[in-house]
Structure formats: structure tokens, C-alpha cells
Amino acid sequence: MENYQILSLIGCIFGILLTVGLLLTVGFLTSVSDSFFNQTRPTEQERTMHEASNTKSSKFLAGNAFAFILYIVMLVITFVVRVRTKAVGIVLLILGVICVAITNGWGIIPFALLLPAGILALRHKRGLKEPSTVT
Image (cartoon, rainbow, N blue to C red; front, side, top):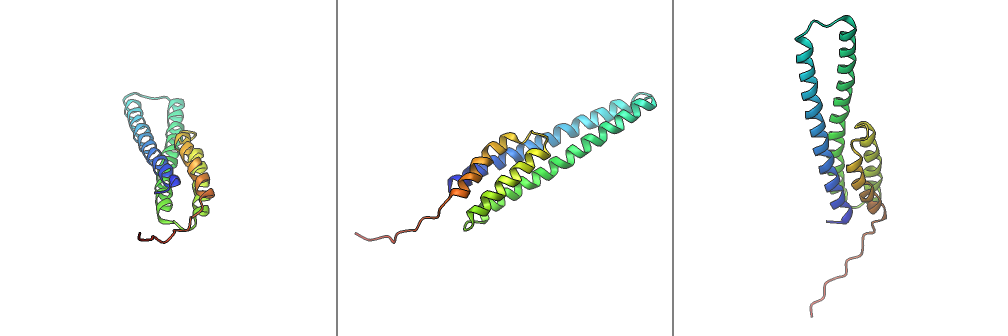
């Protein structure tokens, strides 16, 4: 395994764990908020604020689900494409930035590992293998 593959593997695993954790946390908090909200008699203003909050959290959940899929795609691309490492590096950098933006900055730690992985993939040169000699 090359260095860029190792860094990408670790970064994608962190990203997957992060998005799953955010999905579970925000989903749990949204359901708890809904259950508390339904136990009271809310005013019209409270109802409007609650709907706005639910809309905002549902967009965040959708973005995290998309980031989860992107981390899996990056992981697959890293290990499937072996010949065109420059393309792999570009994909890692672009999708890493997209994941940071989608997760509202929560994906900065996986990006901190995907950034050097992308740079190493861009600089990677496949060496010529010397034929083995029998002595």
C-alpha cells in the first residue's frame, strides 16, 4: 500500500465515523425536540420557529448523508484506480473540500488527512520494477 492510500484510508474512516455520529446525534436531538414540542400547546410563533428548526436540521442531515456517500466513493476510488494517481489526487482534494463545506466545517479533521493524501497522490511516481536476479 502506498502512503497516499494509507492516509486516504484513515481520513475516509474518520469521515465515515464523523458523519454517522452527526447523523445519529442530530436525528436523536430532532426526535427529542419533536416529542417535547408535541407535549405542549405551542403558539403560532413557536410552531413557526420549530418548523424552521426542523427544516434546517433536515438539510444538515441530508448533507451529512451525502458526505457519507462521498467518503465511501473516495475510499473506493483510492484503491481501485492505481494507474492514474494524479486523477486520484485531484478527486481526493476536490471531494474533501466539498465534504468540509457540506458538513459545515465538521469534516475538517478528515480533510486534514485527505489533503496530504491528495498531494502525495499528485506527486506519486510509479517506479520501474527491476527484474529479480538469482544469485
